[in-house]
Amino acid sequence: MALNTPSLRVACALLASGLLLASCATLDADECKAADWRQIGRSDGERGYGTGRLDEHRKACAEHGITPNADRYWLGRSEGLQHYCRLDNALRVGRAGQGYQGVCPPAIDAHFRQWHAAAYEVSRIRSAMDSVNNEIDQHERRLRQRDIDDRERQRLRQTIRELDRRRERLRNDLHDQERRVDRLTQDWRPGMPPR
Image (cartoon, rainbow, N blue to C red):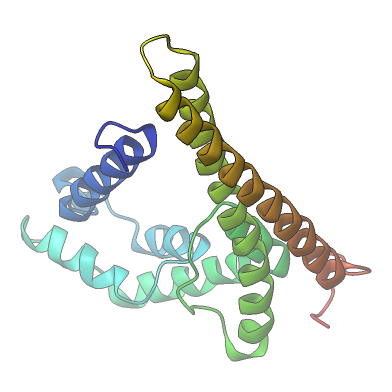
């Protein structure tokens, strides 16, 4: 892969932003001082954060001499998880390409994992298709340039054909995976117990 491809630039930008976010405190001084720990716990639960999130808050607030109210945090987190740990949410989170940290109670965890994994696979395949489409576009732009010789033109056409075959396989995979999600959700409505 060339160093200046769009895919590599996007990957580098995501990595850099991930590193920046990882190095940021979860709460600043004002947020620590005015914290409603039950609401923070609820918000973290609704977002599916793992149990280590309170430690991150504790570290961030320790810098300002503040200790979180763990009891209120856990109460709020439990309330938030009731909203997060719904099967329709498993699909939403998976389709958004977000991971699952195993936070749901045992009664729903296996179903949540199954639905999340199916939806996450849809997201993964779509992302792979986007990447292939970008590569095809890049090669087609290069092919339209006048400064390439016949050998390079032939190599580009061959690469485009291979990428096109890969895109077709991904389309088939996407269709199969979307049918799998449909089978999981058929006849299910929010509020119903998992099947």
